[in-house]
Length: 132
Image 1 (cartoon, rainbow, N blue to C red):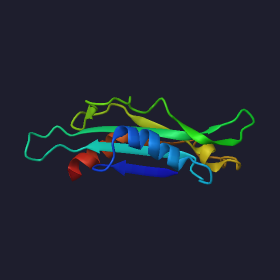
Image 2 (cartoon, one colour):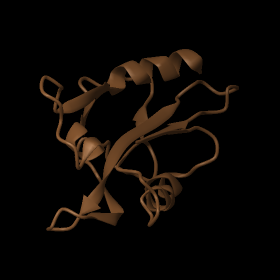
Image 3 (tube, rainbow, N blue to C red):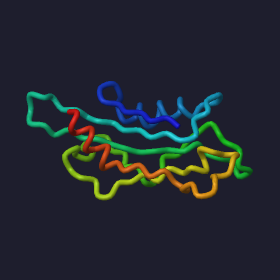
Image 4 (cartoon, rainbow, N blue to C red):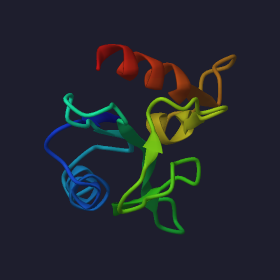
């Protein structure tokens, strides 16, 4: 599992295309990726920081074999070229339900263990805002 946070150095195409291709390329063991992009405004201007968050899983063939590609999950924020979500606005609710079966495959999920790891992006948004 890869958890990536980009602030200064990445554009949306780089984060959601080039980086995703690299993390899920042949020879990598990445099964799940969570990406966050924060667009920090110039501190001399009135703040209007924006952000994007999404997650992807490694694609699978019909026979269950893992492929060297990935698909963004529908729970991800929409990818837009400009005017991403304001960091100051709450994201009620934005929770990513990360599939545990993908992470543990070929092992079964242990009895009593949740089917998903739930990542509350509102809590992460608040944390990012407190740091900026």
